[in-house]
Image (cartoon, rainbow, N blue to C red):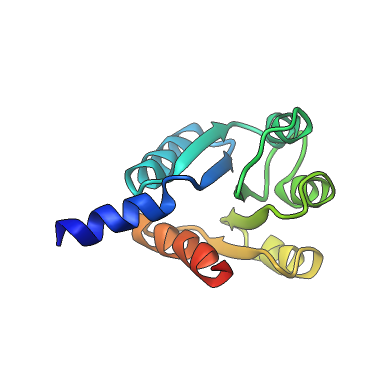
Length: 134
């Protein structure tokens, strides 16, 4: 069993995730779960800070972003990231069903995970994003 766990950790170890979430408790909760699952995570508290990292040339495999945030919402962030780093995968998290539909229309290749969700579901969805690409 330990070898399976080590193999999983090795397979995700090089994957970098940028997490943009304005709710501090949620951000820490998600960050911790993803790091425990073997991902490298950089967390920011707003869309503008996330965009600044991409504009500075930082590379991430996945943008995991809340949709509703001050300054720059997750959908507009994802659209700008698509221009800067087109290979970056996108996953939205939201507690608002109305914006889920908008996200699907404006970013059809992105996944949307609706709050509330269990951390296990988040990790499974992130794993799926990368297993489908392999």
